[in-house]
Length: 315
Image 1 (cartoon, rainbow, N blue to C red):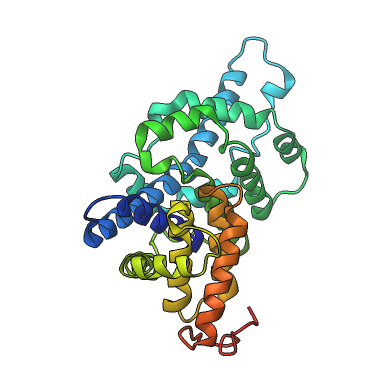
Image 2 (image 1 turned 45 degrees about the vertical axis):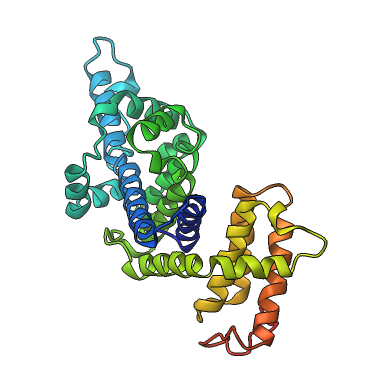
């Protein structure tokens, strides 16, 4: 569920914040990284679990309309398409997800007013009106509706931002990444007609932990290396976020033999856009490209796997 980019970001945050301390501990850093990953998993399932409450709100509105003394024809003969959404039905059958959310208190019952506001916004949207009026009825179309919902209703929602801030400081920076993961996984469910797995990929977690530890161990060496490759620039004037990003990029290129150079450089340039200065993207790209090229030519970086053996400038 956690993307490699998000894992890189999490490792960067832990490394950057701890290197400012007098005596950073790699064991504490790794514990912090694991905990941060667990909190992101909680946010993922908390947001995913809103689907059923949204359907419940729709049912309540339908029942309230039918009970009206002077109900309209639309209220007497309601459109049940949303409340019978087959994607939500499949998701509701996931016992592992339900138990996980119950165990960790990831329930929406205390935020009923937020669910109602979100549904009101959904019901007023063009994509919802088009869905309700469409003659097409399929699991794929039901999935598409929730891709639209997660794409449009959550990222800039002030009510949701308040809940996230209240529940966990670890959730604050993860909302965009988590929503992207949810949308991607709904797309997978759309194709497979099967639930996404609740199990976290331990291989990815191990990647992040190794990236963090190796970057920590090589921090001073690669910091000096950066200084040697900066022309007419004092290393002490280097933006500290840029330094950490470049160190991690060099580390990944050297340590992880199956990750293409092009992927590594692109990923850390992207991270620099969010955590550096307006000029960080160009600076990080230039320094990483220069240092990695030297290490490739010196044979310190070796890539393995199909298409990676001849990697000197192909990437």
